Amino acid sequence: PDVLEARRKAGELGKGARERYAKNVKAILQVGEARTASYATVFGHPAELVPLQNPYEVRAGGNVRVRALVDGKPAANQTVLAGGVGTDGSRIAETATRTDADGVAMVSLTRAGAWYVKFIHMTRVTDDPKLDYRSKWATLTFGVR
Image (cartoon, rainbow, N blue to C red; front, side, top):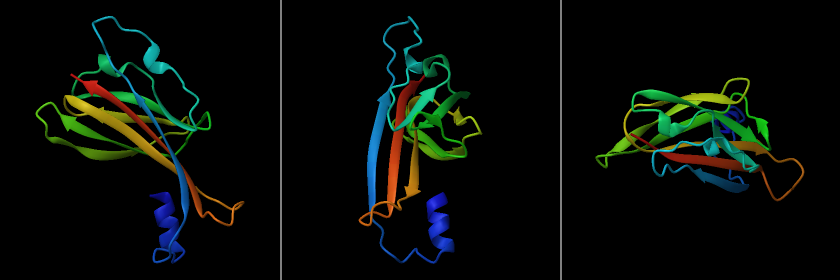
């Protein structure tokens, strides 16, 4: 949304743009009843979401905190989106929030189902005449009971 707003203010919405992007995904699965700290593993991806508590310990109606990292550093004021599919197959409406100064966002897990949390960190490119933007995408998926 920040790049979109900057392009709107600059009168660039009607202009084409070239972007190079990379997607980084992470899925957390819970098998059995034993809980581990593996959910908190930082992979070192260019863009990454790291839960600050085990999402499988959070029930529907609770919250999970996630840290958004870009190049290993907290991404402050980053828009983070969350949504998914409920246990009945219906869509969980996507919501948006922003990270704090430490790159942490609070995500409300309104109901049971398969959830995703994601962000796109987009920056204007000045060192490559063939590109206008570079973006780094991160997605985290997990289940909520």
